[in-house]
Image (tube, rainbow over all chains, first blue to last red):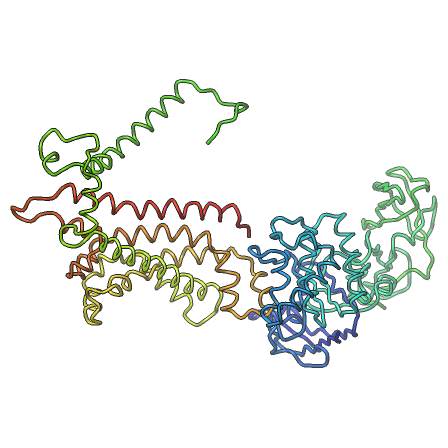
Length: 335
Length: 284
């Protein structure tokens, strides 16, 4: 159990800068999810916390101790890898016990700790099996078991669910959250899936091109995105962006108005904003109506599945409550 | 191999014809070995009197006993042991050295890493025969003539094996090394606990090839062993041939030849089982 502090972290590979100064303060027992598209530097950031990647400049502190030059094993962390990274020639028990064996723990204690983790993860029947004899979900559990037995201060997850099928992903997501709460361990979780980020995080960090665009609780980030990137990345379908000129709002050149699809309503005639229906996706509970505006931009309207769907090609008006609209400056930041 | 009835295959003339061809080929290759075996079971007088016998005689135990116990210059049992020590020494030495150098080349970034790799690679182009004179000079200088170390050491550097292990290590996912690092394994620990067990299929396959390579060495042992007690079996057979007017003891020589074939065959059969099992079990 420990706090993790990143202070003005930068990372360059040779001459290419990939992370340009990131500051994150993680409280004890907090679940932090770092989310962003591929190549945004989120995995690199995690690997710097783990000690698998050197820090070019800035400081990493775990539990208040500077760990920039400390080996991974001495940082009191455990990591779960995307492809599980289980040792293929060892059975489940040995996979989980390996770290403890190296640490020179007595046999009895190793057996007890592994048994405890196996009970927690329902792996008891599989302790003698080799990784290749397990299903994807079970391998994932073994990888988590390997992390748990070490009783680390910080759990690091590097896209741990991306190799699982959709149904298992939802189930494992819940299990990870439950486990982290029960153990009360600080967790840093990297993913490109915004649903995982929304459901798991106490606070999420949205990374974009080597910078942390926004750090905050998921709903806060959703309600009040700090940049157009965050607004477009979090939420599916993404926020609609409309040039202010189109709605006749008095604002500087280049200002963009953002509005979530669920906040927009379709009406038959409106003087505010109108366009033609391109197509409608009926998803059952809801229907997504795609509308092409006068200047060619596409906007999405999310309406209840029972509401009447306007036919393709028809002219519709779009209205929304002023409280829901967000204005972004030309540089993409919130006004 | 058993054929299931449901197999969609028609056995026409081609099937029998190709089998006949293959069987003929096997018989053709096997015939000289059969003749050698027959020759090792008859007496000297039966061999030299034409026609040559085609079926085994009744001197098997006598000939093999004579070969193993006394041979012509040195007892074959001793030569077999020398060959075994040399072949095992070369195989294990090559595997150990090439595993370590491949480990260094793949997992460590040190200055001149590329250079060393290419230097190792370059030795591929220099077989023993090419460097035999300078190598002899070095070994003689160290006083290693007529010794096991002299037989083994010059032959244990292996570019082929290094290259093979390098290629294998490069297919091992990086996360495995990282997971081991997070678990607290230092490099050598990772090498011994993770990489070595994962390479056991490759090690078994290489052992077979290298054992046979070592066993069949002819020129090098011929050059550096002058003491009959240090003769290896492959060169020993040649030493048994008579010079001048001596009479060759063919039954004993043929018994020795057959004996020389047995260990490599045993290694192939024994290790084959092991590396097929390894192939089935291993998964990255």
